[in-house]
Image (tube, rainbow, N blue to C red; front, side, top):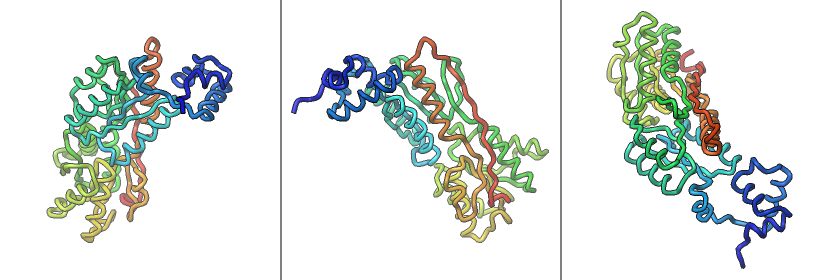
Length: 333
């Protein structure tokens, strides 16, 4: 069977080949009624676009890349949902890369994205080396930072104030009477972990306590299993009156280990996490957490990226900083 061409679709829909091309590549420029007629013709004829050919002609594809630190973390799953929804609405596909916090793996993933001539890249960097981003931009690939602030004016970024989040979490623990606080964090090579711990110290300082007294337990990964191991370290010494975890997965692991050891939460140890993933409210003792606008991070970052891609002459770079929200539940009440 001969392949259906753009000309075949155009004839069937009663439009020009250029209109079909716009529906495929710039759907927002086509009147809704015309777009629906063309899309119906595409479906009826079984037209499949030649992706590699269109990429060669345009110099880029109708794809964007998303590079995250840990796709196993529900936080990044929700971010990815926001990205995909916007991209799909605007006729783009998303290629996902998981760096697992490794700069080397991130480099490999970004090279693959460049080889596929992606239109742009959304990235939560695994480190602070700006060279990776500069190399993408030198190849004409737009880049927007996700869950990471920008330190330059010619760069879009969407982030959450993690210092403020850490400060609010520990201030909440102190307000319920805790005076000894531990911070269970992921690797301190990760910016978010560093800033959340900095916020925790700021809360202690604001309450007239010595920030050096914050007991920091650094986990190798930000998983529930790592949280259980961190709790074992806490249980081996004098238990703090409260524990702040740098994400909810760590907090759920800490909660499981404490309950297994007969420690009452929150009567003996108050516990708060970060991200407010779905599992937080559904745990045995519902988990207090710092909520982030996760889905919105993905949506807004994608809107900024595609605006930069499609409207380079009028695009204005933006640095958007959200504030996290305290959600108090049983683990601190």
